[in-house]
Image 1 (cartoon, rainbow over the protein chains, first blue to last red):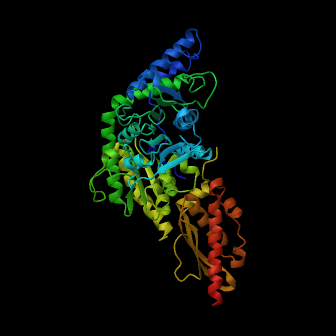
Image 2: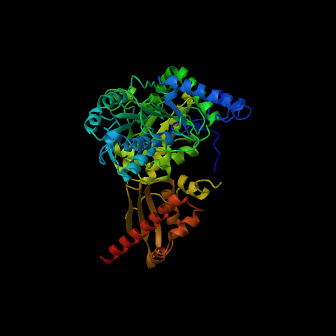
Image 3: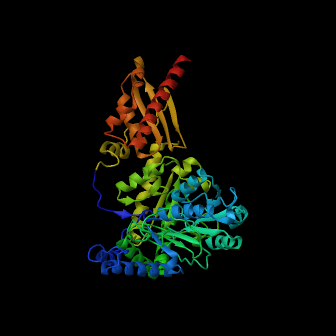
Length: 408
Length: 127
């Protein structure tokens, strides 16, 4: 096999490299500042100070108070804690004393697997789950949320931006509805945090999940914003760290890195967002123009790409997702990889599954259409020439695979 | 660590020798379903004494599905149809070096495709 020197990473939604500025901030906390935040001595207090400063910094990015942020190991853990923690707390709530009351949770059909599976588990435990549909762009109708809320509803959890098709949900509107109805509102912001503005107060968010490794920070750390007064039970019990909500020795180097990357993302958000949108639109236009029978999944980012108005503001600046007629997604990924381009089908998690993506089915794609999908996600080190290279090789790959598939 | 796909799978996937259609094929088999993502169509041309003279495929599927289709064709070309039916998926996997566990079903698909094509051939012969 010919070795290809080119290495172009177009899978930033799966994970990102750690920015060197972040690595530098983390380094002292791996060796000389190694203390355990629970220790009373100098080393412990030094770590504790770094923890609290990181908390303040990240809280500030979304308009939260420091005591409303707890650190976890991942977005998956934060999402599990949000759903299961709220569900458990409702069981002990006198307002929901009746066996059947207070056991209803609303999610959407396009949530990340860690929400889908947590909800499924709660369903097995006797909770009632409503999974709201989306339109062809992946958008949730806030009226559907309003209609789905009953007296039994304890929580609405809607993803802020889709990890697969980049759709940005109307969470401000949904938050307002939940607040009016007196129902907790959680949003999984793993893909949007650090990329687009978030204000937990203006958006009426009660709980919010974010993840460091999706935004140029280290893996192994996430956060959950929990609004003051929200009743939630821990799922990890032990030494009582994170105000008893998440026992475990705190991962200081990763948390310091998370805060540092948050600071950088915030500072560069506007400029970087503009840059990425331009690249994304060039990519989308290029693919749709150069490849026959190719279609964009998610909100159109350019006016007229489907003879319709642009919904650029409803799509993450770094996401493009397509489906190609007569081609299977995995074979595109392998071909691209051989050409030095890293990309993904629906999502990285789906690579161990054979079923088509639940998100693509939810926007109305047929099985074979969903199987022919390709996600390209851009990031901080994506250059204009990377998009040019992709546009140069992808049409040939699709054509070749269509020759092999014949007219199946 | 072993690469996800063996060299042989990548080779066959990148440059399959047997894809295409046989006009006036003696048997055609179509297997797979859109749900799992792989669809395969197999064409055979059968000569005297039931020898498979030519065999070609069209496969809409993952790299493993394309590679197993191509390999299955090579493994039965020149063989009697009855003998060809004895081809089991393990033989295809072995010939390919290996397949990731989740892709083993692709080799079963190739075997099913072959079976369908031979059955189609025998049905036509009876008419």
